[in-house]
Image (tube, rainbow, N blue to C red):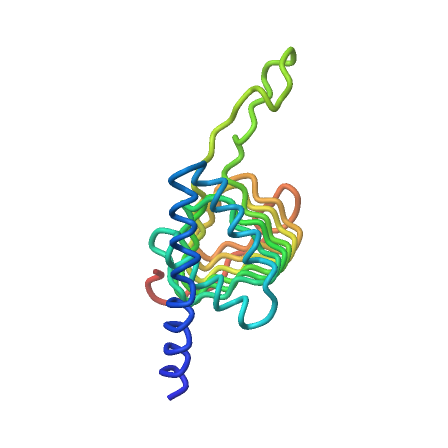
Length: 200
């Protein structure tokens, strides 16, 4: 009964979000799609409480590829790229900044987490040019299912499923083995979780 009620509420918010989505599509067509997406994400991040959570989940389901509305996106959390996928059961805490990424199901992000769009967003090899004029490249970061990313951590590389990133860690290299626990700046392997059976 509870699940049915929750699904009904989510469907109502999907309908309520449709006019906003139509406006987003129109403005995206007329201007910069990613810039428009950021503007809507910033505006939606300001809505507090459960209502804000439902609106954000509905909007991201409509705008982001392969994204579920069975997610929780906290107050003041902003997504900067529409090429972001958030799977079912994901929790993203308040005041996070989410770049171009794919987040596997049931993964948890604490508050103040920053997921960067890779570590090559800004080139700086030419000292005669300002850094802002040297360009860069975005990379889609992948975070596997059932991970825990601790408060205030910075993630700029992919993380295998079932892994844990300690609070305040800065991940500068891919975490390739499932169940890895990393901590520190730069993040280093602390231990491994004991996983039973095949992992997703």
